[in-house]
Amino acid sequence: MTAFDLPSAARFLVEADLRPVQGSRFQPTGFPDLGPARFTLPSGTEMLLVESAQSMANRLERSIWDDVAKDVVPAARGLSWVRVERPDGSYLTSTIEEAHRLNSPYVLQASEKRVFEVLRNEFAALDLAGVDIRAVARVVARLDINSLLHGLFLAQDKLAGGRIRVPRALSAFVEAADVSVAASGGVKNDILSAKGAGEGKKAAEGYGNVPFPREEFVAGGIVAYFNLDLQQLRAYGLPEPVTRLLFGLALYKIRALLDRGLRFRTACDLVVVGLPRVTSPVGGTLPELAAMEEALPRLIQSAVATGALPTDSVVRVTYA
Image (cartoon, rainbow, N blue to C red; front, side, top):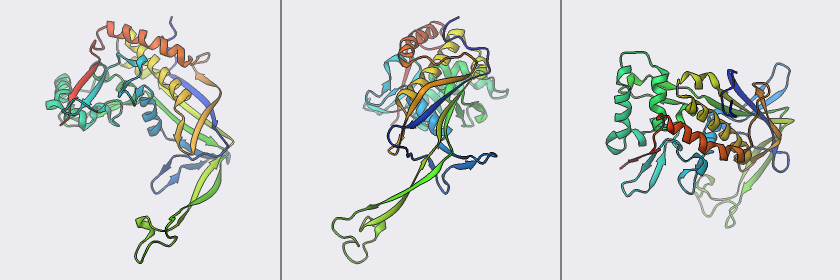
């Protein structure tokens, strides 16, 4: 057994207590026409969604991305992903940054539809057959292995009738309990004219002083929850070293996000309190980030040696 053999449990579940890095107030995620997502438990406890599953998925994806280098972090070199370039060769975007990964139009419509044609040819046998997740996983692993953790929906009709779906195997969210509103406010100042410089100059155009309310929260506790579907990883039917890589990569992303990625907004900067808890399987542990950075390259090399991942890990396409 190694540290990255899959446990026999159905899920790998992690919880981490959080608190504001300074003070006690924090600003939760908000939604159009809804605002903060508040709800009440049957016990009467006032709850609040601090960060949604959608947002946490994006943050987990970017935990292996270097914004300055426009590349994956050194520990993740060798993972498969698609780099989209401009005609002059400069960086444009990638499957790691794109919300829909391989289904991004900048990927599917680039370089004479190179990636699109690969997908259409590989999935041609599925046009009149049920979707085999193992066949899908083999193809996706060679193009963008992160999609096997974060999900994929190839909605185009020419790709197996738009039926190719890979659910998220790794998901997360952040909730706060015993919450109450910390109301405040502020004002946008116009140093030239409090009322606006001249007739017809309105606040909507940026003129004048504009007061505004602000709603933040305090809470009795904030917890981040992570859920890795181990059954889904097994269902891919990939060689064992690749499955171990997916497991190790997921743990790396969880640890990296907890250690350095919890500044959700200007007024929502959180830190971990104590040690993260693995609630399933019993006795499970979440390795330290330094140990993960050392182990991940070895996991990648072992997975590439099976032939399930390409030796040339970056697919480069041009979007004009």
